[in-house]
Length: 191
Length: 283
Image (cartoon, rainbow over all chains, first blue to last red; front, side, top):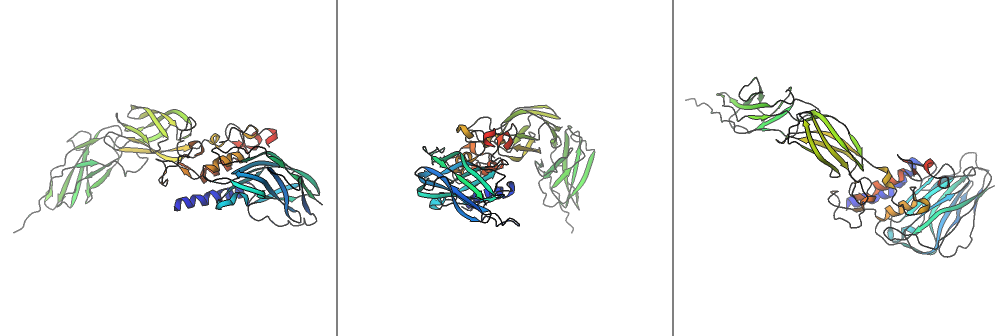
């Protein structure tokens, strides 16, 4: 039992450690505060869909603090969600990815989900989020947050935040994409 | 009246199969049964049985390490017990080559999924010797004792095919064991094959990249294990899939997840995972 518990800890902790070690622009936990000398910018996020419909993955503003913008990646009305994979593309001259924190969707039933987020140099976030083990999928009744992503706005302006290669997977073995998915991003901006 | 202590005849002299210094040629270990009334022992040896060109006192212990022996020559040994009354007759005679010594290998490491001819050089390899490694995923076949100084074998480091449990990564002891049980060892390292990290190859848009789909697929099998493999695997899980067990330790676990994360967002460039190897639309 102790070994199994240790493995659980590793499974949860390793992605966080790796993120901290390998991606200078990524990491879990609370988003960092404003940087020195950058308090003249105010960030915001405008969603493409204000009221997402069923079978939708969408982005919404979850909070702002000066130049920091936290975006909630949400799933609306989908059943048996085991995990998700997607890219988010943005203008890296305008915004920098600074961190992530877990949403509530995948934690249903006490599961310890796994997350992996890394930013490429050209403004692409490659995101994976998954429940772990031989468990059922989670149900999104209404709109439920999968993960929060925080960006720092570098300069005034706006950038589309666009989903690519988006998939929501069920708990089949191996997992299968849930059909009929719609993805809707939005716009990051700073004034 | 003074009664003299009798000396018991030594009955058994044996060779030490292990416990010898590593990376040293011309060495053999001896052990013998204790004699109840002995206060010391004397070791005799030479290259002809009964012709003892060398001897030394071994003190009160029942083991001795003999070094400085010419390699690839059979040496003969006998032991006597001593006490105040004198010296016993000699024990039975044991003849042996010095301990096998592997001092070089054509491959000190190999990646999972490789097959190659392994050539070992050294000394004291006896016809009939066994070549083994304490990793069941490394298969040694067609072992040939070429000479006292050379062994060759065909080595396969699993997994050559999908669905086969890969050899566990790490350093393992490669052993040459002569027919009398005396062995020498050398480390051999199994390296992970990073090309296996891409478990989801069915989704066309991202099939060549390490990304969220690979994470989701791996996560579903997390904490599954197989036997015989890992001592900590209480019972085998039928869902265990060796294709997800990158490091071959019998578990799909956080270690495998960490390997996946190490190449995250990268595409295969022939030797590793890198962002620049990805097509433009995935960078």
